[in-house]
Length: 417
Image 1 (tube, rainbow, N blue to C red):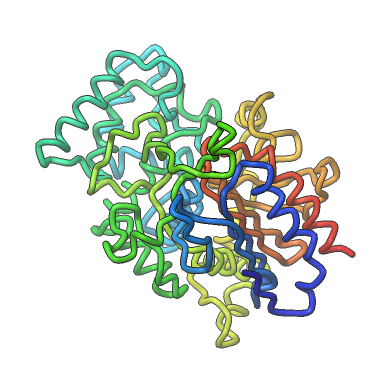
Image 2: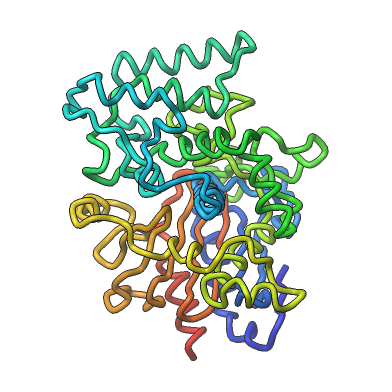
């Protein structure tokens, strides 16, 4: 199903063909692709299926956002920053006291006893990882204890998880490097401590409600009668008789990708828990673009525009490079996903930011910012060209580098014709 809202959409036929090409090549069974201008939806197309039973992907499909949850979490946290309830330079221990133990424990990974700041959580420089590679005995015991407590009916919840996490040694000294991990899950816990409500309730009150995102939930809160609309992680059969059939594959763990056995009903993962429709997430991106380009006053000026939830100078922190030279060097390590990491990119308070459009193969706009998710979801907001771009499918591994560069190239070529 394709929906075009202006004559400009007709120029994006090649984008629709590129979207179908991803399905034909195998990484996706079905997908959604939306483009907006901050004022209107320019392009909306759904292709293929969302579930193994043949349910088509459409505007009602609920997609697992995984790490695209992070963009919502950091935006929610900026609301508290703007209100003077959360401070970027404050130690995390001001909100989660257990992190104060890092100052006195003398871990080999943190011999100076540095306690991460709130900014370290935003920028993924906190010392928290996703426990990749060989787990230590302490880490294995951490997960065994968590699962046992859930089985006993004593889930840790968002804040409890953060408190228990503080008992483990950091992966590195906070502030010295970038490492993708659980920083935004702890940031979600900080939001809960300050607000006194769950991360989901805070986002519903402060973001989803004002933005009319009526079909957005954390994964454990999806209504029973809505679950048939949930997209599945679909893989294509490999044998000749099944080569055109799809089967539902296991989902990555949430909040920790390597631990799908952990399902804490009270843990609202700030890094991976959001489930939403393409249109709802598009409303969020519309808000981001409109805010950074037109400012808060412009957002209030017309009835169809998104509301002014944050001042433009606050929103623009999402596209302002925030890493030191040393941190940026570790952000751009060779071999990382080239759809996020490389000499053309840096990182802000939670977003990839295009800093060198002159060496970007797609020639994106300066300060284009965005992120992606573990099942192949991906977005950018381009203030220079005044557009946002949202692509969603559900397949593991994500393999963004296999399809995103071509989508971006086709889009920018058509946009600038």
